[in-house]
Length: 325
Image 1 (cartoon, helix red, strand yellow):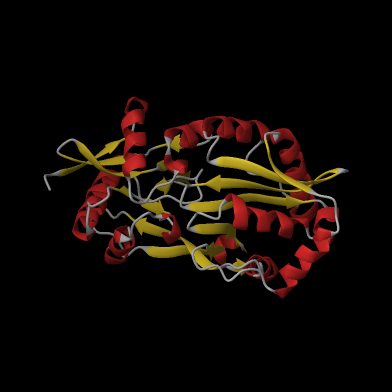
Image 2 (tube, helix red, strand yellow):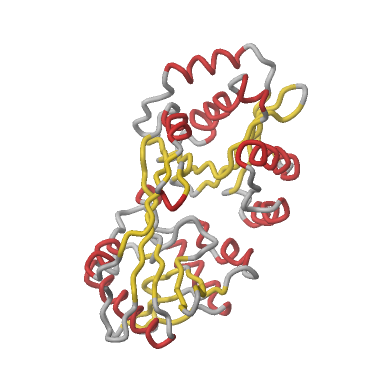
């Protein structure tokens, strides 16, 4: 490789950025500028591009965050995961070490004292791409968060457990229609009511934001609803990366929970709509940066056929002398 240079992304590079995302071995549509920039007013975007002889070889979705008197380069705060996106063959492990070294130099010049880094969970990579984790180890990064998700390997699916099979039979006696929905408002109202009732929180995305993202990514962001004659009783918003079908939002009314309608809806999604994907990811079951596990939620998701996938986060300090500790 020639001399690697770290550049800050600017909007004039949007088409080049998106083209690299499409060609990367470890990227999803969440890294497209149309997704990242929908909440640009809430984050000070400071995404980085690693270039070799003027050619992009890696991209890092990121923003700046101030914490007391410190400036932190954060693996983008508006995304569940991030990390350096890499080309199909390069950089290799040595190249990744060099990229991190140049990024540390860049941070030093900018007065950034820490890199808050969220690597892409392994199931989302089209090809193995964990050179960043090796570089983090070599540079002394500290693991600060470890959440656990539940995902089904759809090529070797163990299927529902006995309880979930009973839930399916229980739902058979109910008149219910399962279909894809374009009504974001209805789904968001169902979701908001469910989250407020069970957890006292609101959805991350507002109804207008979810509508905007569906307009930009209609094939990747899809809503499915289980409906009885009385109305919508359960719903799931799927983020489909092509390799992984991820349940971004899951919701149900009390009636839907009592009659196992989510089980019936998930059976349809797993066995029909997304049966040709590699994985079906139900999402994490943690709070407090992974220190608290919702055991009931984890068992419920596991009962549908899934097992554990970790979502990690690292802190890499930038020291004045040039070393990371």
